[in-house]
Amino acid sequence: MIVFRLLSRLPLTVLYGLSDFLYFLLLYVVRYRKRVVLENLRLSFPEKSPAEIKSIARGFYRNLTDLIVETIKMPALSADELRKRVQFTNAEIVKQQLQAGQAVVGMASHSSNWEWIPSSSVLHGMPADSIYKPLNNPFFEKLMREIRSTFGAVPVPMHTLPRRMAAQKDSPRIIALVADQVPDVPEQAFWTDFLHHDTPFYPGTERLARSRQLPVFYTHINRIRRGYYQVTFTAIGQPPYTDLPEGAILERYRDLLEETIRAYPSDWLWSHKRWKHWRGKYPKIATKLT
Image (cartoon, rainbow, N blue to C red):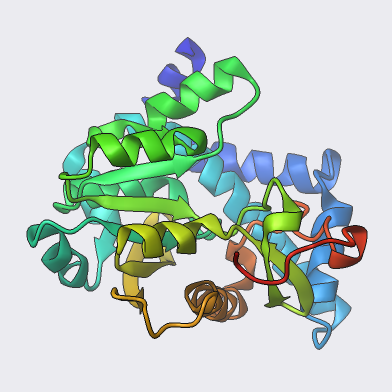
């Protein structure tokens, strides 16, 4: 823990030098999940040439190592510096809901630097609960909870969300979920076409929105330049949901996420095994929300 705290005190210019070294190490020496990255890219972009795929892959490793050092740096950033580095283009559409006493769901993805967004939201007047899957390693679980708590953001383990919702039912805030994770139980997932793959999504996000009658916003994160980001919210669900077909919120999220990935392909997390499940593995699989 002390090593990471010392690293966080280094200027970002120095940390970006470390990122450049990690980029070379992961891509050319360790070859970190390189086969997975290239296979994911080839299948997701069949129209692109091998040279284009390799270029996107190199950009992915640069984004990944920048994410690593920027995450380490976050606890040592001043509030003014983080406000300057993360700008919200239309925060008012979320603030209006919060000021009316309404909590909202924010659906983000593993794109650009998602780790800075909950703390930045707090600094821009939007309290945020950051919902996450706990890590198996106790040291890194403690480290990431500390980092994600910067400036008053609240990291909430996914399994404790119902209890948190009950305890904070009168506290308007963003319930921030990185919604492109692989479901733990594929049989209960919402399945849909995504980047030329039959893909499972967590159904719980839409169920939460419907059961609690919460507005839902897609959170688009765009890198302006190294270390500077722009966040834009897009409304994808507004209660009541009586006339909205089941699965429509997830399909709207899917469409916007795919649009983001196609516009900025190197910024998504291609190293995870997003398509390790397919419907054929599960004879009794559910094809819609139940």
